[in-house]
Image (cartoon, rainbow, N blue to C red; front, side, top):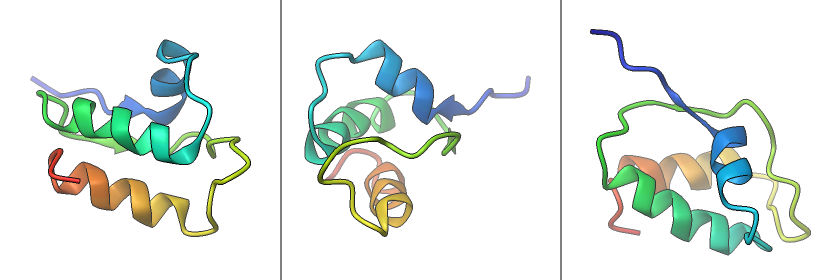
Length: 68
């Protein structure tokens, strides 16, 4: 069985209440603590506070499996 990666676009679409990069990290923590194994950065989060190293930060949260 091949696991489909979780797409960043799906996270943002499923959570329209998100208003900041920090809120996105909090939501990602919830996804990471579940059964999701792979994360696909198919889009850049379009928040005013999205840092230049956004991929590294989100990957760090995801790899810690929710211990952010």
